Length: 246
Image 1: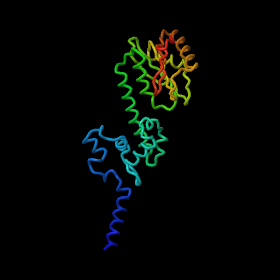
Image 2: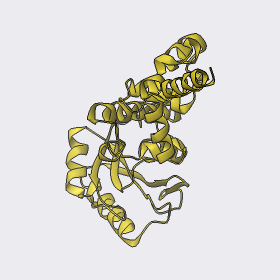
Image 3: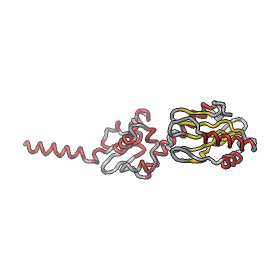
Image 4: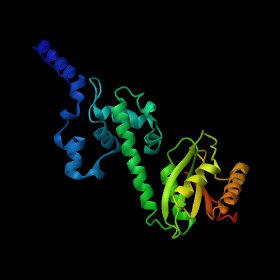
């Protein structure tokens, strides 16, 4: 009798540890991420549960929730760190292929753009603060430096935003000719230069100042006004205009 009971317990333990029994399908209906979202709303889900919905399917060894938790752990439980992972880095997690990686990146980019649009309630530019918050949201997850330009019309409304160049961890090079050519194509009356400092240091370098002067002087020949040059990081922003540079 004891042998039978021991065998039954071992069988039960083996059954519980089989990979397929860790599947999301084996959770109570109310605890499954998709059903939980439907019943209680997206705000009731943890980061891992939301990520599991994006991942959709697990592997023979790991459920979608297992993969989600592994990614969260790799990112030190910080979504900002997860957003900085490249496609290749996401795929280092076994079970995350190209399709899953790009879905995750697309979802994070949508969130980033929503945050940016909320910071810029109006398209009319009337100060550095609103522009800086918009730029922080757009560029905050980039591990490398980029140089971008806002192109504005006569009413100080944004006609176009474009990243002109991308560089490494410590700098990028912006060609004034490309910027002014694009400004003419967009019929821009004024422009705002911007770039990010992944290091967090907001002080402009001598090269930043020289480039700003060069673009400002060149733009005058085309009756285009340089309104500002804004440097952003996760710690804040620096406005050339606010600091009296112009």
